[in-house]
Length: 490
Image (cartoon, rainbow, N blue to C red):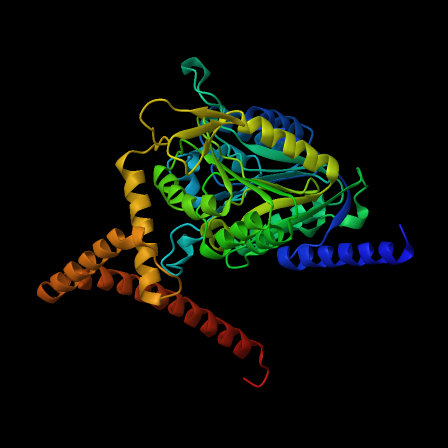
């Protein structure tokens, strides 16, 4: 390669690196080693082994922690280490743990010296805070090993072998090296929002953690409204040249991202999307299916997993870049939740991810526009009988969700005039018109139909603001009293 071409290639790489850093809000960290973990059994075994070896600190953050065999095994391991003098800190999400584990479940750990904090419980002074969730799944042990994944602490992820129910399909990583400092920092930032900050002696500087390999990563720890993963996903979709393979548990694509995927597919990029065929949240599956058509028409290949539940959240592009973590491709993850992902810039790891993706497609059904054709993996099956529709788990709730989303999209497009409506959208447009006319007529006759719900919402928000204002007023009075006591002139 000539000097000019080498300089040009170097400049392009530098621009791409800066684009990734600015989009994700995370700098590249070199010198790491990363291991791919597939499904929950591998995660649970690795977590328990790592916890048992902890010497100084254990930082655990998870959305669902359930009081079952897996949850109790992990809690008991934390209790044992806390009694041995290890600093154990746990953040659990309030909504995720509702009905899963109660205060009594955590009592042994707290009595042993561990600390447990709850993210976003119901609070009158923060009436809208409940819209945000801590959806992270991370574990960091000392400065030795860290884990990121989509796996929650629940026996549900293992399936039910006695009933021939396979385990949930999920993906995570074990991480070694300087990037662990970023994991610790992400946990400490969230811990600080819930009370007294974390002891700084438990946090390591990346420069003081020994290199463990040659892999470069970015730790993308997002909080509500930061949208780091969304910006990165948009950037990757825009920069992919050959392949972009996505796996997502709860895909609900918003227009800008769907347009970016469609543009990449039209530009010749092999864009694939693997989603659950049978979801644990049927309504979300309905929303996902409502968005298939624009992707399929643009050339994006869509697959539905045939197993019990696909819960992984991954991406791999051009055999060079990959992302693994807790973020789904929907607004809740992109803008509303605390999430944590690792973006990996390594050819060998990307090759592993591609191989795993191809293996997953062997247990998936491709969704195509042609009514008489289905594909399983890469093999095409022609149907000789009446065309069958793809499976739609969840019954009427899923179909209602899909119909509702289509109706909302059509009515919104008609009102804003931001896109041209096709003839196929005449029916939802008429339905939307009828619904709005009926709602308007009912409101004229019985204003309470809209008045009561609005009154409840406004009263709840007003009480929350009043409670928060009263608390701040009391704080100001205490500060004024302290200033008066300290003033020698008084």
